[in-house]
Length: 318
Image (cartoon, rainbow, N blue to C red; front, top):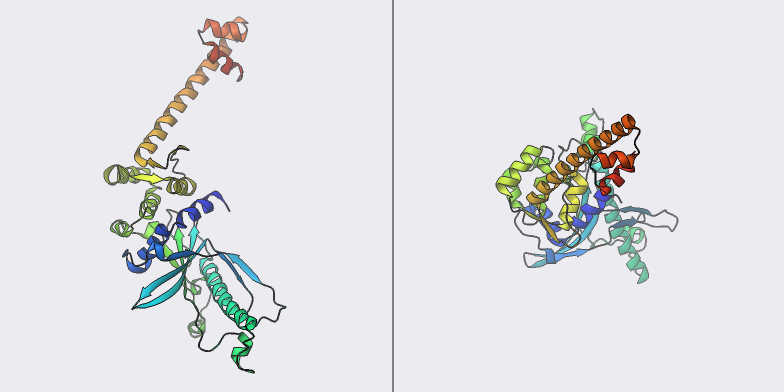
């Protein structure tokens, strides 16, 4: 797993951020899903084709994050599986990726149900589909929703459905093909007023990413609207890894003031550049004096009034 993948997964795994993403996408920002209702699940999607004859090869893929949701709806407890896929770049086969993860999860549920029946020596009605699949007529699957989160400032120009990935001119034939559409949250598509629908640091992270391609817009947003914006370590790691924000956070700090961090970085860059120019000028003067006088480096440095520390450093570059 690369640096950006690790940073985004660690960030989105937090229950408050995870819930915020789905509340924004599903409920227009209303806090319907509560962090306390979420339970971390194994992101490995491993499944045997149902009707396992002990000869089939298992299929295994790894989601970024998968959580179980237990919520109350109309007085009844509802169970739902929620998955997030973090994209630091546009994935041009996202519909296939999402469809595969969801299909594996459903196949896994069928296989696990069948295994439980086999362990209890419950084989369903002989000769029926229940016996073949190990999945009984009255049993139901837990719904799965996969949400793609883009951590890029670029417009998502990839396909959003399986149909868009196909070259098909026969509309009648196409209408018979099952489709799969991805659920997507992309900073470039979020309107300015919509960022207020987020209730965690996810909103600030995505808005920073949205403006990161235009430094003038980014600084205008920060100075006018977010002059006192504080971000924690996980948020800083996401921005540094995904859009090269260059925000510095010390090992003993839990959060950093974003505007100040950016200004500090600019000042350090100016100082470094000035130092490099000065160093280059001193080195050039030392070389010229040595060439014209046949003095040693120490003699030339002394004549130029360089300190011993400066002289030692310059000698390493001669």
